[in-house]
Length: 344
Image (cartoon, rainbow, N blue to C red):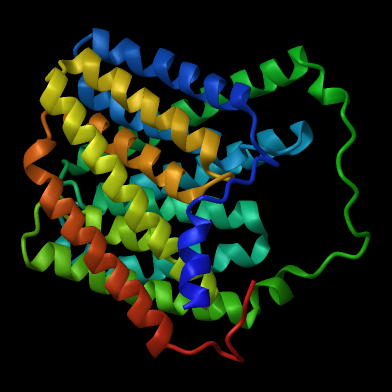
């Protein structure tokens, strides 16, 4: 009972160590600016990868010291471009998409051995791959999709650097790091992250196969939810599943309620998506459940802008989220660590 109470209590714990409302505001405003241009021009599908690139680049760097931000943002942007390109190429080849999901998930999971920010970059890349592999688009759109993802992330990076210089953050000393560095191969040979990568490859492949073969509406939602929920350690995964469930329910219900009450047009969906993006950027390191609620509002509103139904698909998205939770928890229990179960 004590452990369950602690897990539920974690929903109300906020760590504002890396919180900066100016970063969240900057990320949302940059996303608004670059997304509104194609919306005004009536090219709504172009707005989606631009928004995703800008938001995910901002999420990846949130809370970092100035000197490390641009490296993290550019590295994450490159990973997003590669994942978006590959996912778009495979979107019409169902069997091949299922097969390729395993090595992609394994590589993204193993990136966590390189550090916390690398883990976030791998997670975001896997989310992008899931989204674009699950949305049928012509193969000719793969390169433009990758380019738009990169453009969104690159513009976000430039504005972040410019604002950091304007605020004098470039003069702040970087935190000291240990002089001794662990060789790359030794880092990647970490049994915790190797186990995580294996679990992630198995569960993501299973989730993708279920979504594609059973004609589930929004086939990207199930594997995307698996990616968001998975962590290397047992306790971290259980906590992440709980936060994901609560955040998704809150985000879906809030979005559906607003859509029912206001019945927004394209501009209204854009504003709603930007509000969700700001919440996600601000709270990604402070409270995961709140950040997930923001991500949910952002994603659902973004696709609602191009005609994707919102209110009538709430039940399907909720069921897919619960199914993802079951798959992730089952994998943690059935696939033991390569050395032993660890607590963070």
